[in-house]
Picture 1 (spheres, rainbow, N blue to C red):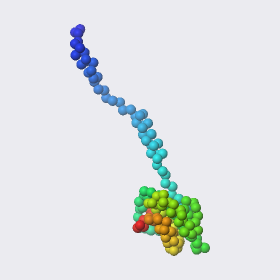
Picture 2: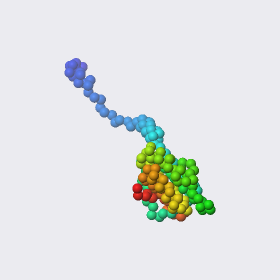
Picture 3: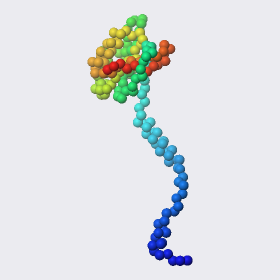
Picture 4: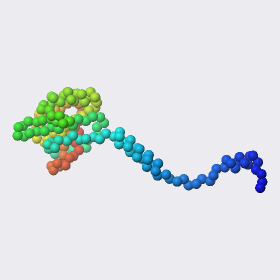
Length: 166
């Protein structure tokens, strides 16, 4: 056996082992995906539509799909009793008899988020004057965007709410 010089010995020791085909490790990949899933689930907020089943929405076949709000949205359910010819307003499960009672609630929401808008879910029997009073109060509170919720068919299938110009 021949004796190797120092240079040959160093070269032989630093020579890389022939590369093998790497094995794909699935377990660490699953761990990372689960961590990401938990992370995104924890930071995502679920938007719960505050729907009042007593509201029968008007029909608007030409409704346009609304854009997803970037900031806060207040859902205002407006009910109308044809027997007594009186309306009532419901916001976040709070009942209001008159529109001017909403002003403080709307003003606080606008102060917290200036781009706040309201989604009006008005019964199809609500009088225009009653809706007008709600919009006047909303404007007075600083709300610049108002959206109306409607259905696209008479059988009650919800359609996307139509936007009103600011």
